[in-house]
Length: 400
Image (cartoon, rainbow, N blue to C red):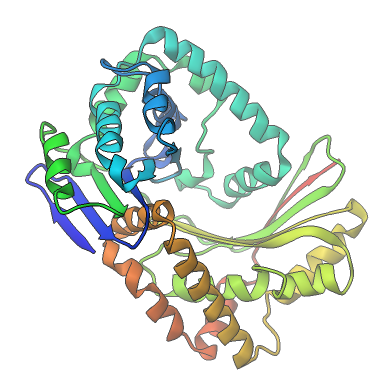
């Protein structure tokens, strides 16, 4: 892996792999956490709008350039970053670079298209609201956090979205879409001239002073908090979890192992207790979300409402990690290593991972991750589980 930081502040991460494909990723270090109360959803809105046309290309022409060579072209926004990528055969790298460069430098943010895209995102909001599997996590973060902006949905709110105009978009875009706030990642099959090509494509971008928001640590929870929401659903959707730590904290790696032991795959404790032994649920598991400024861990289960109480008790009992064996720990470590290495064979997944780790602190930490996981002991796991999976949990329930 190679890392270069240009005088403009633009960071370039490159990693060659034995692959037919190359992925070019552009990681902009801003997401919904950087928004204020008047522009909630603008990060995600801008992600949509840069696909809507540039000074050189229409929206259809942008997409066609990548899709006509069999490429994959997309983006996502979360609380902390916005990530654009194009995955193509190695011989089409120049095309991917030209298209993504055009989008980031020359998007026009046409007012008619702004109004049209608002309708699209309003439909997206309705879809999220209709999907309890997605909505349960929006509710969980809303209830879990009191001060941290992770309590707000990435997609924003209908009332704030409707008020966003071109001036708001340009103000936000010009503030955060600057080279010293961007990481460019290229992974896979590329030649030795690639770095120079990237420098040439983005050489016109100039360093700009940027004052980033500071986030206060959320208050410690000292009681059980429960929240219920009625919806037109056939099953009930339960999430039980806790605030944890950011990725730089050593406990975050231990929590990854705990999450796997408790709820990843059909060999996990929750799957065994709730589905295999008792047949109470089809869909259940564990989610450990670990970011730069916040983290949480939560178990989820979708079940008939009459079975929710027993599922709750089983989850809380599993959180105690009784009779934890060394074999169980080793199996979890092996699973983490296997999933990571297999995903890394996909140049898109590797680009996203390297971009995210560079955002956290340094992309090279991605390659130390498994080493840190392997060093975790049973004693550490039990201590961390006791510390975070305590009696003061947050619970969200969607029911009919």
